[in-house]
Picture 1 (cartoon, helix red, strand yellow):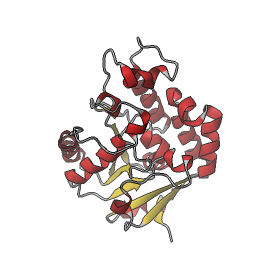
Picture 2 (cartoon, helix red, strand yellow):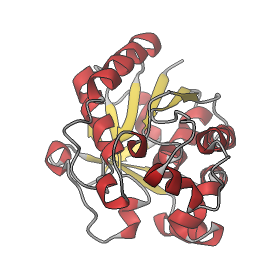
Picture 3 (tube, rainbow, N blue to C red):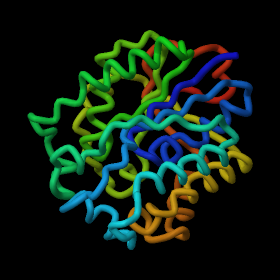
Amino acid sequence: MPTALALSPHLDDAAFSCGGLLHALGRAGWQVETVTVFTASVANPTGFALACQTDKGLGHEIDYMDLRRAEDATAVAALLLAPPRHWPFREAPHRGYGSAPELFGEVRAEDTIVPDLTRAIQALLAETAPDLVLAPQGIGGHVDHVQVVRALDAAEPTAPILWWRDFPYTVRDQTPKEPLRPRFADLPETECLFGPEGRVAKGAACAAYATQLGFQFGGPEGLARRLAQEDGRERFRRQGTLPESLGRLVADVG
């Protein structure tokens, strides 16, 4: 049984950006491992880190990340995949980034998380021996996404990679920030087209992230509109030669 490994910075990124393909891989008999990097609970958050939950109507007494991990488990189940893995790395607001603009600015010099991420990814690659890796391009410029790309590159995977376009950053702006664009510019573009079953599964998975829907889309209706605009299509940059069995699921564009 071939294995696909989806490496998601946050608890929603993989489902938002490539949930249709993940569902299709599972239905095609692949073992799909979903791993989210930044999921650590932090006791008694303060400042901007606390605001990241209170601005969503969640009180300070709530373990925000525990709630989000539960949402992720529901989302992955909606895609008919095995339970997800959650790594205990801290999100950027708990690593010294003190405002929303800082989350999408330059990586802080003191943010030295990449070596630790690289070691964790190397161990994961050795354990799972994936036939395919899925990971973000860092479109939108969120520092956590950028650090995951850097760590995955440093881990030097031998498997082919489909680098996904980070949704919803790709639909928020006609020209979203792409700090790593030179890294991906020469890779061929590949797309996955999925039908009604996949659209329903992806819609249910994305809707499971209830804490994020108001902030990201203005509510469930906004999410549905954004997904409809995608029209059952997910696009990637392809690194390496894909397994022949993927020929029914993805194809190069142009």
